Image 1 (cartoon, rainbow, N blue to C red):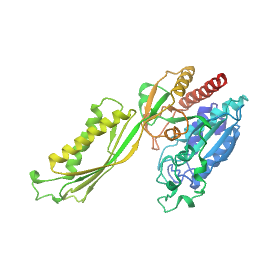
Image 2 (cartoon, rainbow, N blue to C red):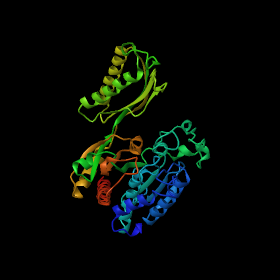
Image 3 (cartoon, one colour):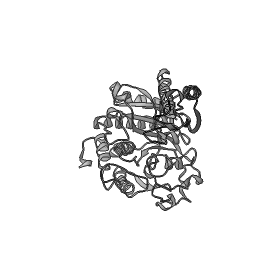
Image 4 (spheres, rainbow, N blue to C red):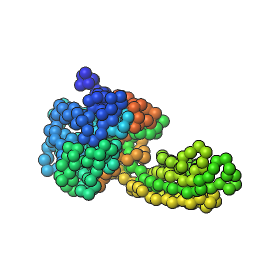
Length: 415
């Protein structure tokens, strides 16, 4: 039934839907597909059949990435890689990751139907554990391919106590999945936007200029626990009230920047946690992002200064630890131009935007120039069963991807 659909975009969406249930999910009600789980293996088997039907030779690399290869006219030319990830978060949506893989398969299928070959080979790759939802190492297999993963990082255990070494891969060979420098000319990833910009603008697709720089902090606020009924308000050193003021200040600073800066407190824990005890300690996280590193750092500095000032005024102790620092990952300017031209050829308005979320593309940038195409998703919702993509938008994305490949092929033929 899936393969009988009229357009490649609709077929890509339908295939994502088909992989949203058992046996392609490790949850009986909802979607969770962890790296190397039975559901992950079943999904790879389904993908393998679809890749083969699209004219590709299929293999698995030492990191258990599924790779479909469509040969080009010049076997010595560096390859174009198209991909995204196959794993999901717990109780996630069907399209975050897999849609990019399905559209890669459909791009090759469109060429194969007419017997066309590019000057270069095209490889469609399905990465694993991009989400880090099974093992605590996000973008694990794309880092292996990009050559940025160290063998020491493979000493991993999942939440059930299963080591990566016992999960079905040879950790001694895992890092040999690395591609040689110069062997990949470009990496293209199509992905749902995971935000509301395209929907707000009434656009099916957008060209990504880069992936935002990210800083993450862990903050500990220390006050004095005390009896809720006997400690007068002026004498309190309430860690939770102080943390609340800090969190409001974080939001205000990000809003006042009037830019793409975003700041999020995603986790907070107060102790001792009794209804009749003033909180003596609060821990919370801060995530600060922007497409511009200097802008991100300026906002982060203002946030940290505000936290220190609030703590001093309230008589609280505060400790701040930076736990994450990811630089911005710009997409290749010439690849953005090719995508713009392909968008215009598909009859769509050209729109560029920054990705606030991380993707395998940011890892692959260490190996080759990257390009990303965002696809409108309803309500900007992702990591949620309510994820929704219109088949018509997926068809537009497919037209753009085929046009991009053709334009890249023309450029290589002229060079």
